[in-house]
Length: 293
Image (tube, rainbow, N blue to C red; front, top):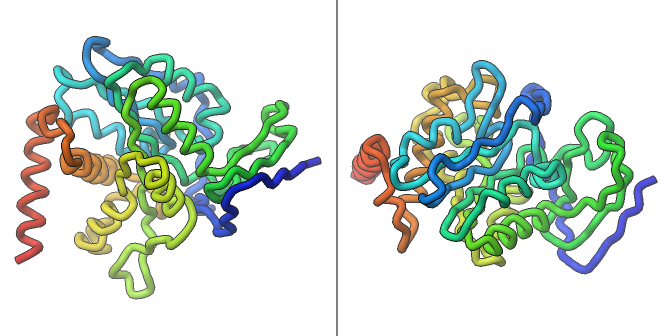
């Protein structure tokens, strides 16, 4: 029996961005995807935390984090992609993957956190049990998890994001909250990617603001780039109906993330770019200059 405990906080009833049925994939087996470790402990490390849109184990599909590392200089920063398919902001923590990431983290490190695609699923079932409570408040739901057979207190999406921020800061690292990559869902006339006005994208923005954490608004930036490229060009970026990308699509998103990092005020990310990263930033600058003419 589920016991819902409504505690003080904000209750948002909007539906978070759940996965489309035609894009459902198995939850990756953690035993097959052991966590990478920093190559050089003397360097700062950038950890990538997320789901299959960041690291994907399905043949023919690619997460943006798998194309990301080539844009940074390995002599100046480690890039460690600890993302895994099928996880939500909740299950990345409850399975111990976040604790394992924290065990590698040191002062001066960085972490990009991107969840949302799987947070809209069931809170308690015997197949996935990965959903988080909608919203950003302090509500909880106490369950006997049908999948893990463990007692669990489930929290809101916003509460889990706040934990990532607080835990990273406690380690002396800098957290970046990242809105989830958009799905290939066009508006009625096919000229613009749909943007949600609520749900996990809006909640991530809210938590970043309330916690004074840096926001990488990947959702808006990638959606805007898709708008500019057009429907036909974007089609080659996707390996399924609307969620998971090909190598080309993953590389496109990785370049957007590099651009967002390079544009952060008072950051040193431009100094950590590889030659490919410098070329990407330069190409992006010239493209935007051309678009403004």
